[in-house]
Image 1 (cartoon, rainbow, N blue to C red):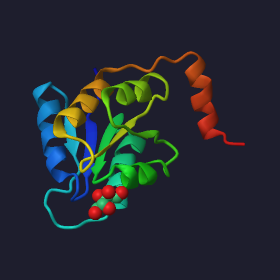
Image 2 (spheres, rainbow, N blue to C red; image 1 turned 45 degrees about the vertical axis):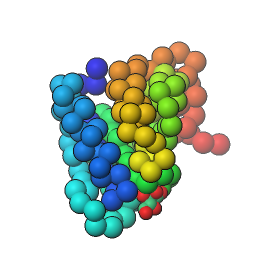
Image 3 (cartoon, protein in one colour; image 1 turned 135 degrees about the vertical axis):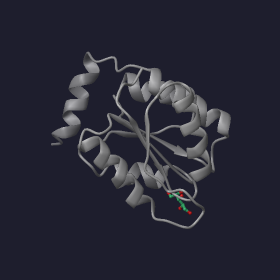
Image 4 (cartoon, protein in one colour; image 1 turned 90 degrees about the horizontal axis):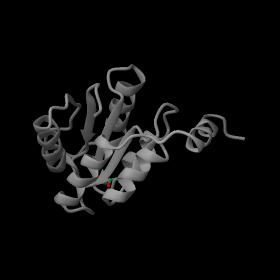
Length: 147
Ligand code: RB5
């Protein structure tokens, strides 16, 4: 189980799903840092990706969750930060694999593409699946040292 707070943020396309995820995680005993947005007003997803990336970079959270309409903008934005390995997933298996093989520290979800039950299933898998290490560690090290 993830120990430090989980940082979560969404743009206007993901705000309803964010509420459901916060309720799920808090109900399971996780500490959640909700970094917005909180309403339906149009906002820019890079600002919210930055908030979660900064929470991880500063040590306030080990993991994060980002939600926008497709999940694509959030994943592109989050992966611009060297400390972040953000994975856009669409089902439980991809959520498990991003932890097992990629040690993803940010989960990205597309609220307009996933049903709520599937999205919550992805979250449950993400927060309970451990990185396998071993041969995968060297590959992750290469991400920080591109040729
Ligand atoms: C907002 O309309 C939408 O573009 C955003 O939520 C996201 O899907 C971008 O990738």
